[in-house]
Length: 340
Image (cartoon, rainbow, N blue to C red; front, side):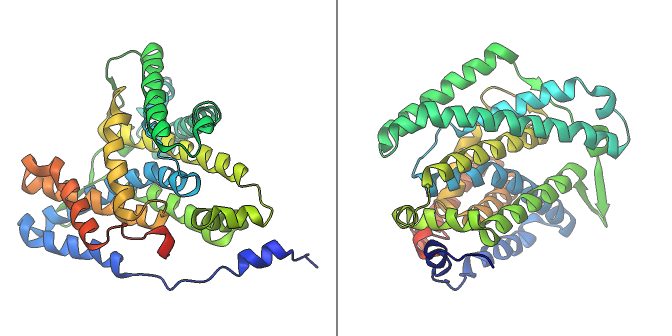
C-alpha cells in the first residue's frame, strides 16, 4: 500500500476551479470575422493554417518563459538567446547532413531534423542551467536587477554566437520533403506549416499531461499559485525552479530550430526580435498561465497573418492592438494565474 503523507493530502486538496471557456471563443470569432474580409474561402484557409503554424511555434518558445515567470517571478529578457542558439545549432547539424536533407525521402529528412532538434534542446537546456545559476540566482526577488542582468546576459550570449558562427545571416533551407504545399480544394497549405501545427499540438499535449496528471505538474501549478504553501509542505521549490528554467530553455532551443526553418534564414538578432512577440503573448494569456499562453500564441499568429494580408502596413501594429483590446477586457490577461 502506498503511504499517503500529509503534504500529499494537502496538495490533493487544492480547490478545483471551474474552467473558464469564454476566452476560447476568441479563436473562432477572430477566424470567422476574417472570412468575408479575405475575399475567398481558399485564401482564408491558407492564411488560417499559416497563422496556426506561426502560433504553435510561438507557443513552444513562450510556454517555458511564462512558466519561469509564474513559478520564479523572474522576467527573463535573455530568453531570446536560447532561441538564437537553437537555430544556429540547427544550421551546423543540418549543414553536415545535406545528403539526408536533400533526399526526397520523408524518413531521411526526419532523421536529419530530429537530431538537430535534440542537439538544440540539449545545448540550450545546458546553457539555461548555467544562465540560471550564474546570472539569475544572485538577483532573485530584485525585479529591476533581473531585467538589467538578463538583458546584459542576452547581449553577451549573442556576441558569443557571433564569435562562433559569424555575424552574417545563414540560410537554413527546408529539407526536400518539407517543401511545397498540399492542396485542399483550391486552398494551398504549406507542408512545413502542417508539420509545425502537429509538433506544437504534441508539445501542448505533453505539457498538459505533465502539469495536470503528474505530481511534478501538481507541484509546479501549486508553486505558481502559492510558493510559500508548497515550501511549507516540505518540498524544495528551488529544484523546481531549476528544472522549469532548464525545460523552458530547451523548449526555446526547439522553437529556435522551428522558427529558423520557418524563416529559412538565421540571424544573431532573431531572438531579440521574437522576444517582443513572446511578451505580447504571455501578457495576453496571463503571466504564468500555460493555457493562456497557448490561446494567446494562436491569437497572435492568426492576427499577424490576417493583418499581413489585409493591411501589410499595420501588420506590426496589429498584435499590439490585439493586446490592448484584450487588456481592456481582462486587465490581467485571459487566464490570470490567481483566478484559475
